[in-house]
Image (cartoon, rainbow, N blue to C red; front, side, top):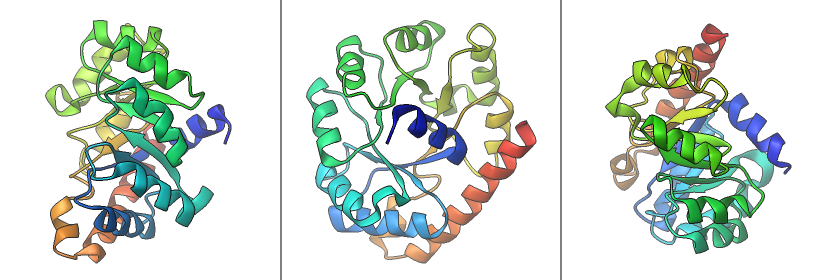
Length: 217
């Protein structure tokens, strides 16, 4: 998929599920439950056991049906191996020049983490297509809206502290998308085999995101 097409898809979906799964099998089942509920943007973190194997299996199973990426990149070498596994976008929780350089060299969309105004600017200047405001819970929508004041041209996506009940506030603050982890897909539900509940949460979250995007227009 073309880089701009993927970025447009991220904006269109408005939601990336940030998955820190407990095992290969359970993580794959988590993703299937999310997709059944209408969440089609999936980020498998490197903190998931055998994360690249998970991505490879998901890429084979879903193909272009979902937008599949890898997150929590902390080492430059992970950028290339994530792409080889089947990731179509890359996400890091940090702003580190060599890491971002390695991520951008792959040619896919890159989201780098930042929190302060200086970090946000540095991440963007280093080549991040979207700056991941992390942890979003520290400042909330009001803080992100303040960041958009001096940086209206920098696409931002909060992760951490995003829920179906406050997603409207985030989009009103000017985000291009939101990332949601345990608020959307708690690992304990997978461990307990409660995948139907994950599907229900996904449907509720996806609906809230689409309504929030419409409200923010």
